[in-house]
Image (cartoon, rainbow, N blue to C red; front, side, top):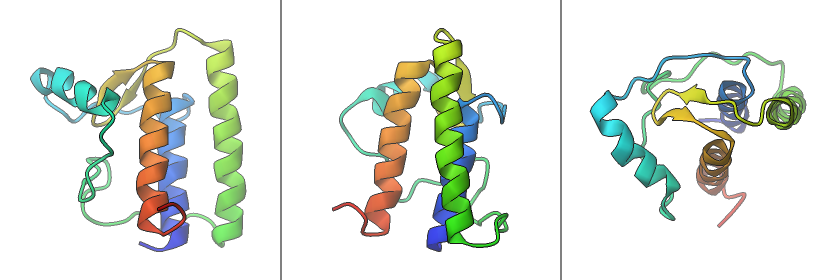
Length: 124
């Protein structure tokens, strides 16, 4: 995965939490309590996790270059903040963890960003 793929992947994840990309949950209903417990624990996301929306491959790049993708990522994060300011009780579906509220999305994004930033040596 290139740095641009990683940023574009994060854009999609943020769009799931700002109301711009609505998806179904791929996890079986009976596994959601355990998955949410994992999410809300202090453990990081597993290193070899396979995103159910993408599978083992990568989406084609959408943006011209890494800098363009970074600008869009910042805009999507701003829209995420605005979405929950305007809709504080909103619950949006994560394809793995199911319906998440604002606090749960915050935990997801922190773990997800840390997962990829560690992968690329941005964080240790």
